[in-house]
Amino acid sequence: MNALVSKTAQVLLLTVGCLVAGCQQGPAMVANPDHEAWQAFEPGSYVVFDGTHSDGTETRKLRVTRTLTLKNKQGVVLEQKVEVWRDEQADSNQVAQRAHLKEIDPEGHYRTHPASQILNRGTETVSVNGRELRCRVEDLELTAAYEGFVGTTEELRARMWSSSFVPGGLVKVDMSAKTKTHESHVRGQVVEYRALKAKER
Image (cartoon, one colour):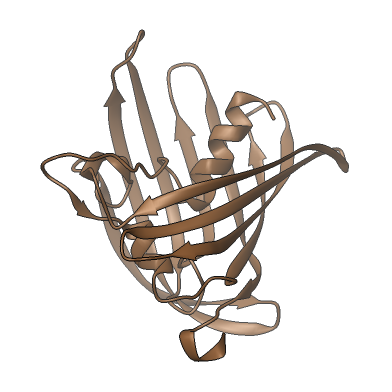
């Protein structure tokens, strides 16, 4: 998977994954939204997200499967599998484990970033595999500068549909990201999920 698709796939469900959720330690820690979105569920819970990624020259299909594999007082661990197709042919398949601690640096997540603006747009019903889910709808705007060898400013715009019944919370997304060197657009939604509670294990 090329660097752009890999970044966008992370962005997708670390939401959307939008800015990749960090696990940094520091003096001004805040509650990690990714941890909060999974901590109500038990290991074995999973979510499957189907979508597309466009970079202005081509569009690829994405499937992201996230499974809760470990849960303790410090945080949760998710296995994330990212599949990418180009012209109906498998382009790549990547599996990784990612830990989400209970607390993070505010700049490590799009929801807690000081520059993030999140607007409530009410509720809408989204159909997932024949089940109707009443979802909270939010618009996100974030412009953030990141220091590196070359300074980079990233602009993120997204509309997100969320439900607490779905592991990870995110049900549907329409997101665009832009830097000085590239633009990308991701859209899609959950097509399958398993939400295990303690009594169901």
